[in-house]
Amino acid sequence: MSADAETDALAGVPSPPMRADARRNREQILRAAREVFADQGPDAPLDEIARRAGVGIATLYRRFPHRAELHRGVAIEVLTALVEAASRAAAEEVDPCLALRRFMHAALDLKIGSVLPALLGRFTVDEILDSVPGDAVDPIDAMLLRAQERGLVRSDVVFGDITLMIIRLTRPLPGGGRFAPDDGLAHRQLDVYIDGLRPTGSPRPTTPLGGPAVDAEAFKRIREQVIDDAHDAHEARDAHEARDAESDLDPDPAPDPA
Image (tube, rainbow, N blue to C red; front, side, top):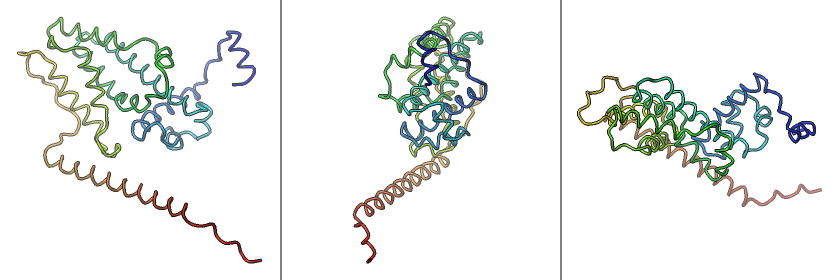
């Protein structure tokens, strides 16, 4: 931060609005970081985040000079989007059951079950929640209670049955995210789960299931792909570690004779 900016901040002068291109770059970096952190963890290479965001590494550092700032930025962005998704679904859907379905699918796309756990320990509650405009808990719980009052959701379902299932479904399959249809499969399984929230005696659901239909033969192919990919990745790590070990053991080359 420049001296002038620090003086303005101390004087309570609001910062100038971010230019449209700078705001767009920041949003692209946060979305890319969310995907990379979910797949590779919070210490993933920043070059990969910049590449996926379609910006230069200098632009990333200009927006987020320290990795910790990027961690906090991603967590705040995900939780803010979660609040917005819950509020929009509750306000725009007359049917509370459709509102719940809409919110749950939006939350699935945010990958909250893989992004936020990967970042735990990198910030405090106050650092994050104080920067999020609102709390998604209230609109989610209100949607659930409305659906139960209208007999659309079984009465013994509670808040955690909604949120914790989303967290479970947003965790990638084994193999480090190399199974391409994983996201579509999660949405399909969420639809199955949502239909299971209906009370006894409800009419059969008529909404077709989306995403890939993994039958027994498809599952066998996925199983082979996941195991082989994990094996290849393990061998690559072993080879890299072996090269590093050999490099550490090699003596310094003898100087050329004078």
